[in-house]
Image 1 (cartoon, rainbow, N blue to C red):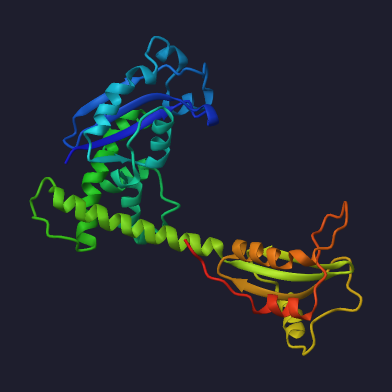
Image 2 (image 1 turned 30 degrees about the vertical axis):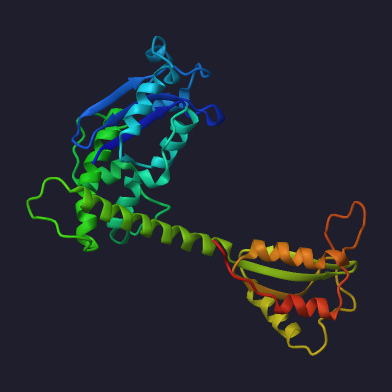
Length: 317
């Protein structure tokens, strides 16, 4: 299997971020590419320079990245897998710089692999994985030079990949590995790669579902009712008041609501944003039109309030 293990160093200048260095290793540890590039737009990058040590003077006479784009593209075109650590950042930067064909199914983030192997042991989740330096430490890698040059980081990433893939396969009992096997077969790699993608997709879905959850509350003001969305439930005293109101036979309408609003009803939803949009659309015909008023208010009746109380939804990825 042809593998391109890469790392980039850049100006880290936000919208105008540009590549300063790109290093690529093959699966056998051969340094396929290690080049510096002169950015087109940036003249200085003091913050990132302190990290990777690439100064404007070092790239003054170097080509622009786009000048070597054809050569770089050929390396990726013949690669079956693209490896990196925190790879999304590198891929976005490469695509912004003109590289094509870096589809997600071709890319493996070694950071995800580190999480899959050591997540439980180190108490980390997919979204809070330590740095490459920490990963290399757990894999027993000895740095020959300081981290944060593209070549040094790409080399360390490839080492971690080799170690972690074998541990990953054994941990989840994905396929047999010979005790003294030096290199994984394409079949072993593809089996592990597919399983890792499935694990990451499941974790991302779980995170999205948790993020989507929330509460919708209906508040009554002197001028009408207002919808409020919250990620967290009410405090105990607020919940107690809401429970009392929900148990009343008649629609929970206060005769003299305060300027701060009276809590009328609250519902927990699987997708709070979706619920807010749908309830806003449902209440739209009852909108109170008042110029310059900072709240969106509705004139609701008992049926409207009952509809709100009975509303539920599901999360759709």
